[in-house]
Length: 396
Image 1 (cartoon, one colour):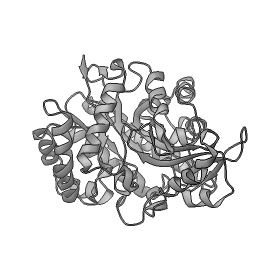
Image 2 (tube, one colour):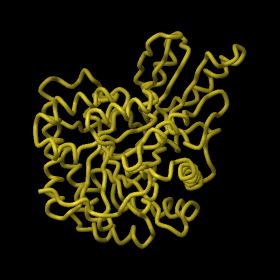
Image 3 (cartoon, rainbow, N blue to C red):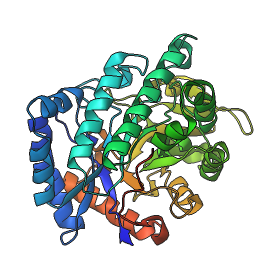
Image 4 (cartoon, rainbow, N blue to C red):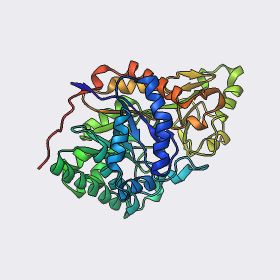
């Protein structure tokens, strides 16, 4: 048995083209490895924007990228295929959800990532690619668009089945529910599988090559219990191909001394920033159903609630800072609820280092990422990381 190393997601680094993406890996990932795993390979979840991925293919640089990563001890077993364009422009917000899965550009981008991942993976290692949960906003998906999104995803599954039949390489594309998107809960994911995926192709192929990317922060923001989410997927026969280990920001005013309520809300306001959306669920009063706000400023402008959960990825080694919670408990609950062998790919995904409030900033980015990986390695049950490095056998 071999242990696949934990990864961190390199979408934290800027780089819309291939050369700048690699330059940032050279600047940051090598230093993370020196601090966290100097003697053993370190996992990296690669991110290449569509421009960089297309450049890699058109310039025939997959072999070069494979060798570059290998020489530096970086093991790229997963891709983040969610952000299509420049994830570090001044304002990202809703742009990160474009193109949608009913648009050809999303399909082409994902096929490009598949080709690159197949070329850089070590022999016998399974690969994964996390991707957009169809589109932003449940009301934007008209009845004719969701079937088209399903057809495009089934096309990916069929492409991956042919790849495995031809080469023995197993890669799965993992749909990542996110607050505010067409799919933002486990129930949405199960419904989409049953209505728009399984009805459009070979069930075995679809279940094998289309899976879920479970982002712990996203489920926590939606007030889903981690064990319930995983059990819902098991019951539906949907595999979790990748777990993104991430922590949300929480504030429970019922547990906050009355004299500190104003200061607590002021600290929460410190997470307002202009680059990313920070979807927020607010429970208006004890026992009431939570209310969804697509960004933190809207939640703060509404009448005061009793509980806030905000989609802002904070360092996973934190439990509490000031009067706010880093929702680390859902991470531990998820890791304990997973069964050995249920998921092979674990990726720390704190992409928001550059927009954190000053009190959470670190001196060097590599220092913070290495600390996260060290904490995760000490926390994750050993049995979740052990599996045989082997081809699972070509399907036929």
